[in-house]
Image (cartoon, rainbow, N blue to C red; front, side, top):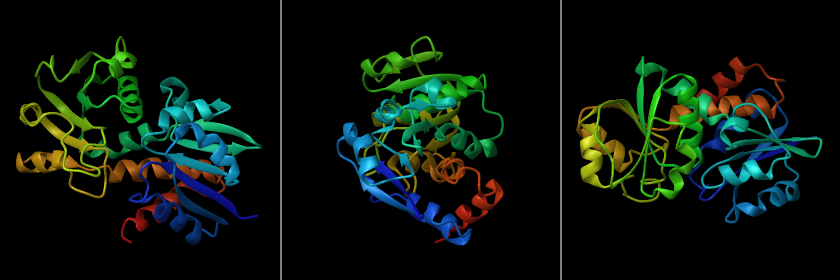
Length: 264
């Protein structure tokens, strides 16, 4: 019986996930289809999942934390971080995983040794990445517009800052996890702050993919080595697809076909 998978988010129309997963299914003869579902109310995730008869799903902004609550069981790294980006229907029970963080670690290997990171933003992606960096003994600071969203990070990361109390220092890598620049020309923090930060880092990454965000444009102008979220997207997608097919396909084959989808 053909399986149906989906991406839940708002917005989702820009997402490459369907082409990535459908390329794998088609070329490896796996009987499944992957669709996009624009979900405005995250509280309806579970109900919508079952109404579509899904075998699994990916979750993107802004529903990764509510997805955690929608699951019957959460496994692995997602349990530590409280953020889910992949759900599997296991005999009517929703099992949550997080493949974002390992996907990102794969994406930044080419930067070499990274010891200090500034994470901009405090949402689900920021939580997943910061927690994963800490596992690798990387020193992490978090910068966010409001103090209220920083509660999760206190006693976990080295420093939590708002725009008003940020103390400038050198970082190996600065990562934007906010949606600033996705549908607009906004920066993830005031320009003066971003300018100072970029003058004190070696590498820059943005979780947004498929466009040169205003944040990355500034990094490019400053001559920094930067990357968008495409490699992170690929990395998490490979791991999510392996979960979707319950390891019936070899991960090397999934990687090969999914990599090809980026040329389409």
